[in-house]
Image 1 (tube, rainbow, N blue to C red):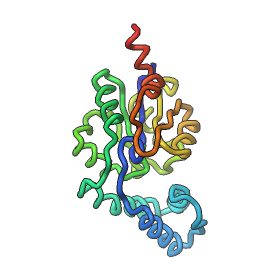
Image 2 (cartoon, one colour; image 1 turned 120 degrees about the horizontal axis):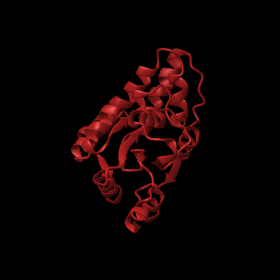
Image 3 (tube, rainbow, N blue to C red; image 1 turned 45 degrees about the vertical axis):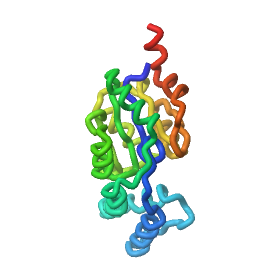
Length: 201
């Protein structure tokens, strides 16, 4: 049975209605201004990580994300996935350690979770601003493991993308891929966590 369950946020617990094209254009503009060569056809995650790797640009990239996500958070412009939220509440009641490892900004993540009444359920919230390298780097997952002091072999990361899966592999933890748009049937996920083992005892 797992002891630490780490969730991605966007497209895993809920769907943020952020203008990601605008985020992309602002980061590319920053890259051009600062002389960072990027392939504009690459995924936003790859472009963002490349730009943040140049000294002095990490905070600027994080601020672009924070600013663009903030309006969505303020207007509560996001779609919650009820089955996943119910699972979070269940795991918290059963005393699992819970964490968020997300490419979104920590302040926005906390505001969303506070609005949903979930912020106290999570032992660790690690947004892009709390580590140097975001997914597919393993840093956010490692951060959660270090904070909770739970072994990697008892840790499961839940996400929706190939970058989430790569981060889990790099961190040496188990991974469960959920459906984009919200997982409605959590049976297989509950099995991966080990909840059925608990019920059999």
